[in-house]
Amino acid sequence: MKIRLAPLLLLAACATQAPSPQVVQSWQSPAAEFPAICLLLRDDGTLAFKGGFEFYNPGKWRREGDRLTLTLGGVQPFPADISKAQLRGHQGGLTGYDAALRQLSYNIGLGNFYFHRGCK
Image 1 (cartoon, helix red, strand yellow):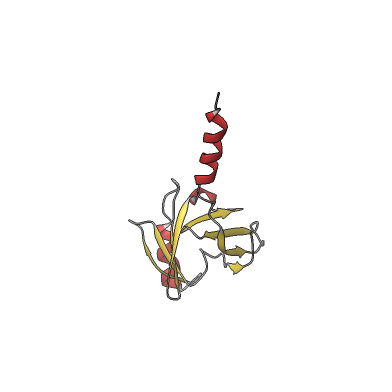
Image 2: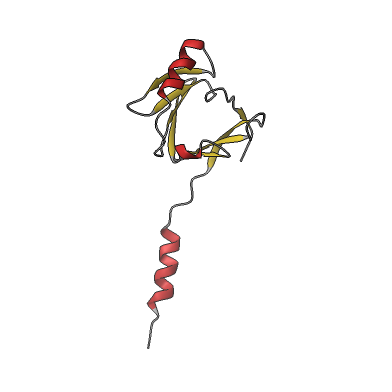
């Protein structure tokens, strides 16, 4: 009696794969002088930009009370000069940043791009 293990192993591998991370929140900077940009926050703590800022993918996010902290991934240099100017000018909802950790803390907004719930 021959038993074919390959199909059984394939089925077992599929059954043990973790489900893909699901989007729990999405934020959008509407199109204006730049195309619309989406920020997707996933249930596993990862984030992804679509339509712009994709050079900061993959990133991470966490929520601390009313503050949303984004950790930028990618190889693009951290926007420290822009972050510093935004803090001084109270622009974009930025409440703090840590260039060494590549983290931005927001009420919700990135640069002069204001994000609103609603993209996928």
